[in-house]
Length: 194
Image: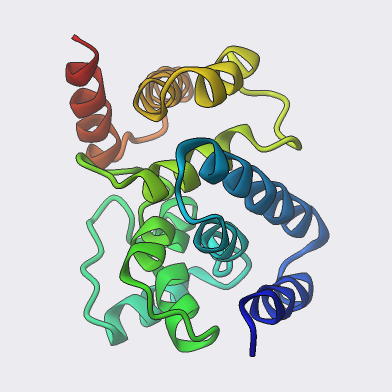
C-alpha cells in the first residue's frame, strides 16, 4: 500500500470513528500540519499522518483511554487520569500503533504530546501541537491571527510559546487544573526566547 493509499485509509477511518465536528477539526489539523511541514522542511507525509491521527482516541470513553495506556505501560500522571481532554493524546498514540499500524516513534510521540507538549520537542511534534491550535476551523482562541502569522512567518518555538502562554492564561481564568507538563513546556520555550 502506498503512502497516499495509507493516508486515504486513515481519512476514511477517522470519518467513521470521530463525530462530525471532530472529523472536520482533524482534517484541518492534517492540512495545517502538512503546510507547516512544507514551510519548515519537515516530511509532509509524516506530518499529515500525525495530524490525521492526533485525536483518534478523542471519542472513546475515559475508561478505555486508561485501559489502552495501562496495557501499553504508559504512565498516566494523576492530573490526566480522569481528564479525557489530556488523556486522549496518550491513548491516541497507542491506537495509532495498534489499530492503524503506525510504528514511527516520532509520529507516535507527536500524537502523545499534542495536548501539553514537553521541553525539547522535535519540529514534527511542535507542528502537530501548533496545528491543533491554529487549524482553520478554530476561531475563539485569543491572539489566534497573531499566532497563525507567527507559526508561518517567524518560528515554531515562538508560536509554541505564544500558544502555551495563552493556554495557561485561559486555564487560570476557568479555574481548571493546570497540567504540570504544560507549565514546564511553557517555561522551556519562554527561556529560549531570551
